[in-house]
Amino acid sequence: MSSLVRILLAIFLPPVAVLLTTGFGLQFLLNILLWILGWLPGTVHALWLMNRERPLL
Image (cartoon, rainbow, N blue to C red; front, side):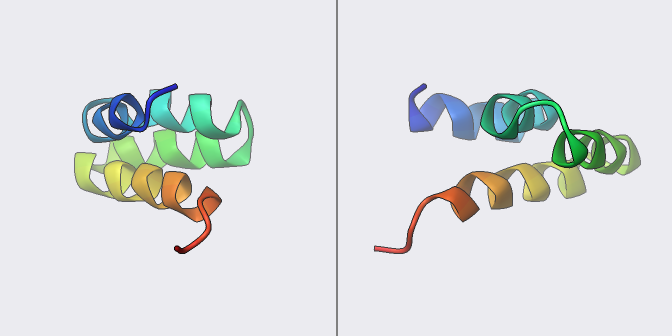
């Protein structure tokens, strides 16, 4: 999946981006909880998970 599409999903629908990135598990459930608490925490968590997988440089 394109990085741009994943970033857009992380911004607008963070749980969907986490589901596509990590699958159904603890991170997905945590993201849903964060998303319910507010849009920003869920978005930050989703973007962090996507960038955690990529090595720096």
